[in-house]
Amino acid sequence: MLEVQQLSKRFRIYNRTADRLLEGLFGKVRHRVHVALEDISFSLGQGEAIGVLGQNGAGKSTLLKLVSGVLMPDAGTIARRGRIAGLLELGTGFDGRLSGRENIAVNARLIGMTSAEIEERFDAIVAFSELAGFIDAPLRTYSSGMIMRLGFAVAIHADPVCFIVDEALAVGDARFQQKCLKRIREFRDNGGSILYVSHDINSVKLLCDRAILLSEGRIAYDGLPDEAAQIYYRLIAGIDGDAPQKEESTPDSYGALRTRIRSVVLSSRFGPAMRFASGEEVTIGLECESDQTAGLSVGILIRDRFGQDVFGTNTALLRRQAHFSAGARVNCCFTLPLNFAPGKYTVTVALHSDDTHVHDCQHWWDAAATFEIAGFSDVPFSGLCYVPVRFDQSPVREFAEPTLQEP
Image (cartoon, rainbow, N blue to C red; front, side, top):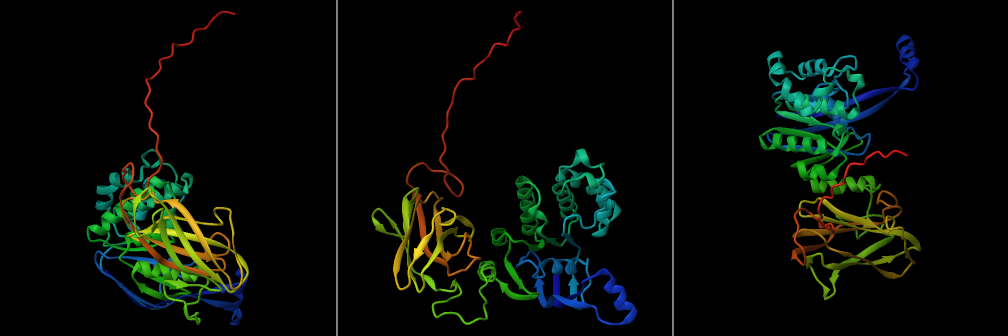
């Protein structure tokens, strides 16, 4: 559906608006060049969903604008096979002076819909957006969430072969976000192709077959979403993949390693084990050693078999701090009930400063241990995890209407 070959895009950056005019008049260069994208190549097949990851400024939004035709490339080619519809930056293609009704007609034309298609699908677009009561009001009176609803509704009803989604879905209430993601999954299951940009790693893992990781305008990785996520975590932690790593480093275990985790063991009251009942209390023990004296945060992250984050915590969030001495080994333990549904899980562990591994990542060890929830120890439930619930029933009390009494 989409073929991108050796795509590049550069922008001229001027310190002052006047510098552009002065450069044109006198010929002296007064700008610097920012390379947004360099030598980007990939293909998107029918029914395939590709997630695009990267830190801010990596070139994600620029890539989507080039693919959707909002920007023109400086080099390279983009081959599109069929209609491509996209939901890019909030408000792209909308006019605040026009009503919602008028903006539907204009925006739908911009993405290639005919007058007959617009008329045929207008009611469905309005119904999906849930904006019937505001459809004739000027767009400038809409909230950001309402604009996102309108834009998504138009794009998804254009019957594209490829749907492009940027971070705009981060706006709006949770219920409508779930509605949009459900519609995107239906689109993919029916053979549609998706190019999806998000900082939400879980949604990329859940929705996408592949993931492209951009770093400084280049493709750092193109492959499985889980592997892309791990490399992305390394980038945001400031771990340079090309820099020499300590002997203990692996693709799943990395960091400065001045303080490191040697082993991870899960134990119940009967001792070390890998199979537990839902609700059973378990201790996750981390044996750590250090070459430095430091106070750090120790963390755990439990993921399900799909790689979705189910539960995570660390000592910073618990308002505690672990203390390490040079040359000493210590055991760090988290004790918790495994209130999870039956299935297989992994435990990721970390040592870092502050409350995330972005700050002074000493050790990140992905899937350091695995375990299985084999059944229920108490009350069964549906979903991913158990939350304590209390149910009460009582008769409805009828109150007599108050009567006015004279003083």
